[in-house]
Length: 87
Image 1 (cartoon, rainbow, N blue to C red):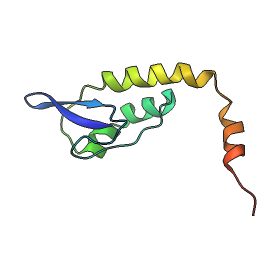
Image 2 (cartoon, rainbow, N blue to C red):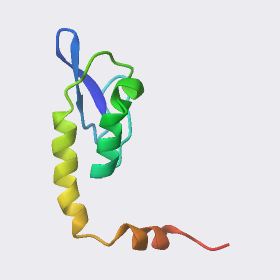
Image 3 (tube, helix red, strand yellow):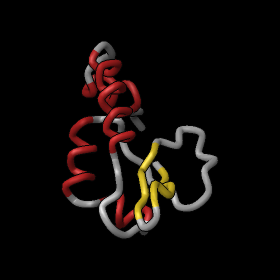
Image 4 (cartoon, rainbow, N blue to C red):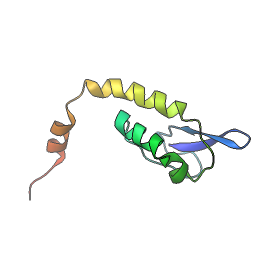
């Protein structure tokens, strides 16, 4: 995620999947629960060091679109088990 000027005195938070936009960036899991927590805690404002209430509609749309794709994948529990290794 990155903040871009939206209009004078306000910013919009957008998805920067390539990671090439200037300025500070922030990471967010494309999961509805993580998005809701970030919005509730005003995490974008703190992480991106911006003032005011940024427009987060692009991020909401991205997570909603990603959420549909994740439902067809394996459950999170199985994915974690695949990524874990035993010593």
